[in-house]
Amino acid sequence: MTIRRRLRHVARKPIPYWASPAARALFQNISEAMSDGMLVCDRQGRIILVNPALGRMLGREPQSLLGQTWAALFFDGRDANDAFNDLVLEVVQNQVCHHNRQVTYHPPQGPPRELIVTTDLLLDQGSQTRDAIGMLAVFRDVSEMKALHHREQELLQKSRRLYQEKLEGLEHLARAVAHEIRNPVMSIGGLSLRLLNQCGQEGQQAQYLERIVSSSRRLEEIVEQVEAYASLPAPRPEPLALLPWLQGLAQAYQTRAQAQGVAFQGLEAPPELAGLTASADPKLLERLMRVLLDNALEAMPQGGGLRLELARQDDPAEALISVTDSGKGIAPEDLPFIFDPFFTTKAAGVGMNLAMAKRIADEHGARLTALSQPGQGATFSLSLPLG
Image 1 (cartoon, rainbow, N blue to C red):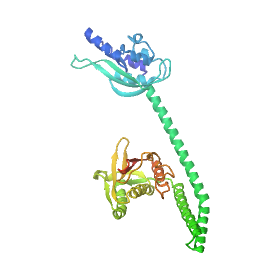
Image 2: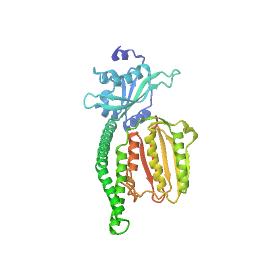
Image 3: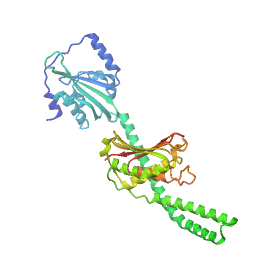
């Protein structure tokens, strides 16, 4: 049965509606002041009220719509508005109400409009059976909001592509650096050490050679970390029960923390998180967590407090793993750059560990963030999607 024929089967029994002039005037003022579109039909589908906001959405004069049937207004022979028409038809004929249903409306002229439609029945409060005497439809135009969301999605995708290209470029650079520098550095260090052994440990030449050997070892360390970053394998996710896994990792750090005078509180997590499971690569995730725990201990050479926590977040469903230390903290001007390769504030640091941890997090679809205030320690948090 076509939509037009279905509308003809709607009951035709007229039901009167009484309202005082004051009530009508108040209702008219409210409807005209609304920013959302509003339409009221009687039981036969005839339009008895259209506010100015809906007229603007539809590109029509509100007065020209009064007295017309819903079918005459919207069923214009095009299939583009079938979803829109069916929504209201269900209310008119089947008395099915919809709340916040999004549909696309194609006006006679102009681009399509995205509308959030809320429909409801108007019931006869004076009858015992509370028969339906009409229909109320409220329209909210979200076209601009949806277009903005679409642009945001495009920008996000572009940002992800650029970030991926940056990672690939950095990986190629790291491989090239590791390949081209390793052999010369090892040769310089080896020959310098041989000359140092031949000339003895005394004299100015020995001091020069010791500096060369020390610098070459420093370069070898840089090459090793760059190579470790470049050779980072792709994740091989598997179901990982986070609570027991983190408990084992915390146990491995207890002895080191005690020897350093650090009070390690172990793992703080409520018992109901025992079944919390994520899809992750255990080996890569352990490398990430070891970077965070090592950094926390290095920030407290004279002792302090270390806390490892696990929590669950909803919308989206994520596990939140955090590492908090009571060290000297991170300077505000350094905080935006701590995950950049080769950025470090340590005298003997290379600056690749946090960059590698960030890359592991990104390749797991996770977020690695840091919060800190100078003199009050730092907190690194990993938001890991549950699966």
